[in-house]
Length: 327
Image (cartoon, rainbow, N blue to C red; front, side, top):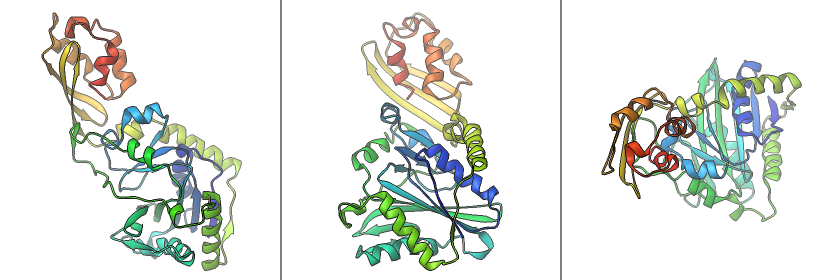
């Protein structure tokens, strides 16, 4: 087994590294640890826009990254440690989460933290979740990865994942909002993610004495960087990959009431209808037509609004006011 400690806090890098390492080590067992700066990691089959508070995420410059595995959306920051096991699929039961959560539980139990695996894939302490786990199978290998909330900013976590449930109707997997807690309430106050990382690594070595450390090479960094650029930093993967959905939002502005309905297919607007009690001197259909084929993404739609005299459609409005109805 190779033990890999990521040198980066960039979520694009670390999520890309998980995929890159599947090809780099097609048969070897790996144990990867990483800590991300503030970011939201969404499950492969989720509708990203339905999982996040987009305005808050943009204001706080929180990265949004889609991972390869299913499951729900999670918030990462420097108070959250992430672990990832890579192993041959044929050697393990894909539906069993207990084997690779056992080292985490053993470590915490030895520190007198009453942590348990509950349900299919969650680790809890006193009935509160501190770790969610997910899996994927690819190229004959299996990855099981999870989070460990040590001292995460819970207020930001709550705000970043808050979204109006009436805005979207889709068939994507919705995240279950669970009661969560930080382990810092159960560990010495001076415990850091770096300290926890070292303890968990020692636990792995205790159970696998043959394990050896592996440091990412310049070639590894280049390969991960290329995958970041081509996939994990792109709107097409992080947002456009989302399942088809219907978007609906209503706002009240000085010019009147505006309600937007969109049918979105692979991130692109296929149908658009705008309703309201505003007064228009030009047919609203002329604006709706310009939205077809556009990405359901703020900067893309802003180009449309800035290129039009919106007062002809809505009366006295600004592009920023209209854009709010589409977010």
